[in-house]
Length: 144
Image (cartoon, rainbow, N blue to C red):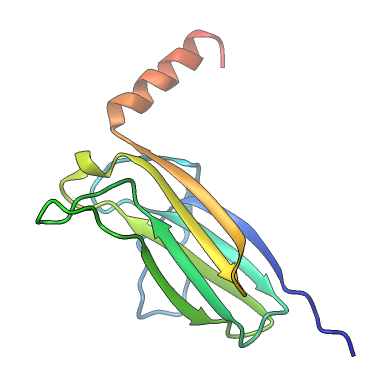
């Protein structure tokens, strides 16, 4: 008898409503984007749809852009494990910006792994608001 191969896909990514870890409800997507303004409490990440992987261990990791802790040491990536709850399951992986927001700027890479293999990943570019305004003005000036 052949084993089913897990099927994982990112179905939504971008900016979301605040995630409530005490609720079974996933956050609602507000904007599909990989460009995230460095605003306190903004929630961003992705929702993955995981099929045919019930009871398998899913490892998640969020790589921050060299954010220092209170002592000035670079924070390690945020990581953990969960077990896939069903053969048709949706999982939210995300983070928020906290004060001070200026040191949160950079690439935030989020990954999901099954059996040691990265099965979903997304990189978000967190920037100060004035940087995005310059990018928007650049493209708007060119007619986009």
